[in-house]
Image 1 (cartoon, rainbow, N blue to C red):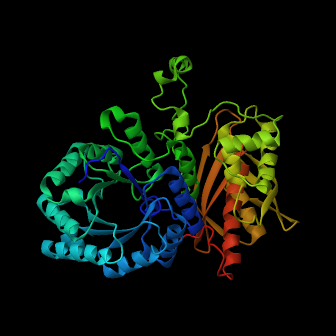
Image 2: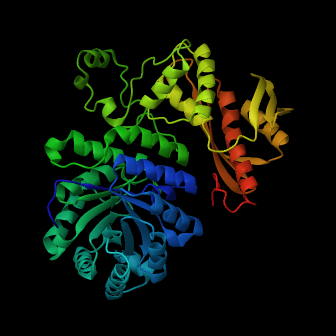
Length: 519
């Protein structure tokens, strides 16, 4: 392997990240994330697994046609029909990569593949050779490599490199490895695979033991030069290696690693929020790099130190990852132009029509809150700027609730200029509101998941509610924000309702884009 001081970032948010239960994204959302990854400087974007469904095929195909400054990878088993689907999906890609995988651990070969080691080697070689007929950039992954017999793993890697693989990925598929062992595996590969200099060693770690980032960094220190990761660490089970953590570890501790990436780190927060929004997964406040508390200090000693010299308690400058100040940014006397400029500084792009809507919400919020923070503005934009038509809008809400009182609500919605209202009671005020909305809209929703978090500090903080709702077995994610959590809950549910209405309206139009439909 050619020695280099640059680590390639292979982002698999759109493929492995989407495999997290409940994280499925529609085509528009995937393309939006792919464009954000390209803007960030990701080297390779794994856009999907084309053979598994027409939707996944089309998502890879559409992404490949829009991304020009990053390689686009498509996953395939070591089966010709998978490779054919991947090649076809990548037709428009400026830099296509076919990512072929086959299990090599004893437990997988015996119980899943039911193949002998010799058969596995033959299948892997045939798959790489076949893929090379169509695409020059081939990556091969021996699935469950960290639990594979080392001598057999060396044999497989030598064979696939000879067959034409330019990248060999060493997956810790079930998150079993520990850093010292995993680094030793990389060192062993470099010493025992004769033709390893002809390929880049990649690593793909899962977080089942909370060691994905540590394992990836240990492997990089040992000589790996590609890290496969996801934004926010999303992924199946406990998740994947967190891209932002690896990137910032390499940057902050360049004295130790002596390595760099091509990532434009000020784009990290913006992209993290986008992925959180589209997957519906809330970022924990204590999440490294991108959590809401990552750059906040409550301890008096810490505050004093940071005010005197930020580096006393901050090893990363907030602006290096795209965080802006957490203090007051605007007030009720601020104008439309000031709001537009602040949104621009936050990396939030809105058109003139959307700006009018956001400005109206901002004025309403500034009358309710003593302080309006950047996080408030982000919540307003995410709540109000939609790429779908709001079939139903909240006009008014009256709630009566308390101890030993059965909650009673009256919800009034507006649609096409007409108002409709219903009264309802339920197990709680939120349940009652959702029942009233179902009665007005004629849709019967089943609430699958409900999450609420404070997006800013203080007693007058905004609450952000995220819901996942099933309408006729089709699942949608909704987001709503308000200083009133009941109102935020209603707006989140209505967001899901409007997505369901948009999909229903689009079913008779082949050109319409699916908006939130989950398989």
